[in-house]
Image (cartoon, rainbow, N blue to C red; front, top):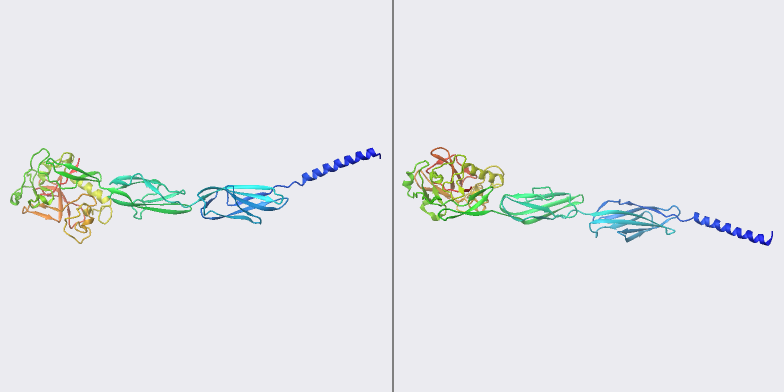
Length: 435
């Protein structure tokens, strides 16, 4: 072989070897590792304060895993170099919200692989609420609004904090029918726990008062009970609203001469003493001004303009409203035990029977009606009797030509006494109701 040919052969050989080495290097290029977060799972909810074990599976087909790096929201938090690959993440200082968990697997030739999931940090609710208004009149409705945090899924409202759940909706309303100051509580819950808040003296419910003036200029305080407006004082007018005077009969013997009819008009004061503030006592005829209730039209009678004498049905409406809305002395519903809710908180003869007007009188008059024990004018001896023991009022309804319907409360009876009738010449008090 010539020297020229030999040199050419060596060049070709070098080129062949170089190509072969390049191919060999391509064949042994390092593969990236594989990694996967197997706990927790993507989308998991984690209660704040839990210590979460982030568990990782990682493999490398052509080498070994040397490190697993751990990140929360792309911030490095730790590393593990031994199988099983894991890291304990303490969530105690974390806020509620979404968090990314990222891992980076590194092999012995520094190739990398990444896996990322997103989890939620959650917690039991923190209960909070507001009210549209916190001071109202009776029969007022309050709109409550839930302001709880941490995504509650159930709500238990107690609008008077008596231990009874009153509503289970998120933003309920409640109508208060009794005056007073009420604590309100709300307990919320979700899958991670529950929380309760109580706001003491949160809702103040007032009695709504007004006033009316009679022909003589006497001013009477009025009170709203249910849908009715009542005088909260007994009438003391001696004239009708057109100025006509009512006969004043103060002599007992002269009162005895009055007949049970619709024509004998008369009034007097208990023991002829108007300073007792009981109001006046009237015959039925004077009250309705000779025109009994006919079942359809209000009887104005002795009432100031815009008011009328309540019929028996209107008295029963008052009774039924109070009995149905918690005004019974024992807190029951339905039965007529409303005596104490109507009676004034003073003036009654003391009693030891719990439902009587004279028992613990400071607890009387939750309705605002303020019934003083004003007694009545008898038709047997013409005397004033019953003060301290009874309060009675005429209705506009009559039973027959000699008897009319009469309403009373007594020192010894727990309910409102709706009599079948009393003789028309008896002198009773008058409460008017607004048209």
